[in-house]
Image 1 (cartoon, helix red, strand yellow):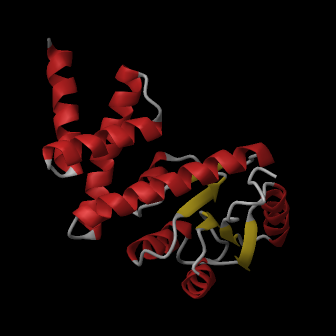
Image 2 (image 1 turned 120 degrees about the vertical axis):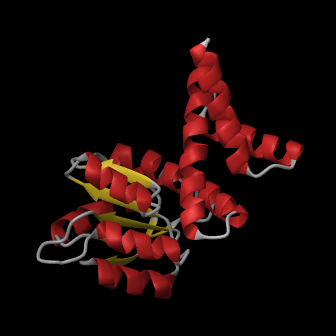
Length: 203
């Protein structure tokens, strides 16, 4: 198992309209040391289940056959209500879907087909990003502002990772530390990092 028995097992809800995929996913997650606490076959059911069970993560397919809404719509509701982070599964990699997922506050995106070894890194990254998002949201007055702030922070993180060779976690801690040291919102710190990069790039 990827998680030690002494650590608290992460509780996960899986949502896919194909029972075979749900079964395979449950098996993979169990093998990786995660605890599947519920299953759903559509977005509405997943939302109701998540409201009731308060999982650590919801893994959800991006499309459901015959449904008007999709995984992105459900993810937007789960994010807005602060219930749980969402890791979307999809056989599609179109830019419009990725952008919609980003706008909805989705913290992870995994393209099918994936292997059992792909799951744990995607899950842990999604959980870490959701923790970051909660910190950002504390500084913001609204979900929209929090999403805009997260975009800037993600962009600034990317620059620090690229230019300073930092990991994603190190880059976020750097932004957070600068925010505390200078008593400035993380959004302002992120904007300053981006601006400094643009100025240096013009030289």
